[in-house]
Image (cartoon, rainbow, N blue to C red):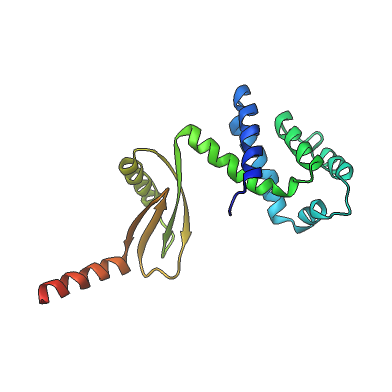
Length: 182
């Protein structure tokens, strides 16, 4: 998902506020949970995107939905502000931008590992350890199955790609055989 500048500004402002109080991890978890609800429930998103619903009604809906749910004051205030400004539909982008800023501050690099078959927990730890050693950063990876891969795995971490797929090994073997044949 692409994040626009407006979403980045809201995320940066919220991070600045929660960082001062030391509740940035909790705020991110709350923000992500609310953003996930927006992504998964089309009726919620439709309500807040509806131009016939006034900002006052949206604010009232936010307050009613989260009253007594244990949501931090900072995240609640951010949601109310977004509702007032008719920008609450940006919440998934704001959560993504917030995560990006938080990762920068904590020195975390995120990536995706695609494999033909699900990887064991041991294999996942080994990949994370090798990537952390090579990149000299904290690594957080998500794992996906890719039926297009014959075997092996391809990791995309930050701007790096680590390709240990069977297809790549076969291409390298073919190139080596062609070089030796000539």
